[in-house]
Image (cartoon, rainbow, N blue to C red; front, top):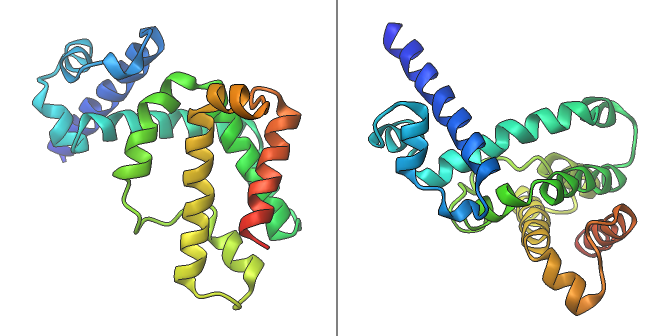
Length: 191
């Protein structure tokens, strides 16, 4: 029991240190494991022991902030409402995209991990709503893939939001344009 408590404290120190360093950094990709460990007051090896990698630690740090963001947006109320699954997905993806847009340092730091290393066997938050939308017309595997495509494409587009604005004239910092983009993606994938 004592070991679990110490491990929990160490994890919390690492998450807090990561968050602080990411906020302070000009380029979040330059935040090193050694800097995180020094700030947390632990050995660098604890990052891998607790999280498996620096990238997963950064991802978990973002997830913690993201969960707070969702609570502020009354997502639970939205999910409990009787909105059609497709419309609910549009609203939920807008909230997620808004969080990514408002946290560009974390978006930059986690995009590679999310796209290339995240465990795809873990349930996506979109999956149950994609499945409900198709109500048995698509297999679970097809619904999981659609949910993955929704989140992966959104992550990539938000990551490249400056290029998207320059090349296509879509300003994802503008809520109306962001919502329009989300609506288009959901409509395309949930035709």
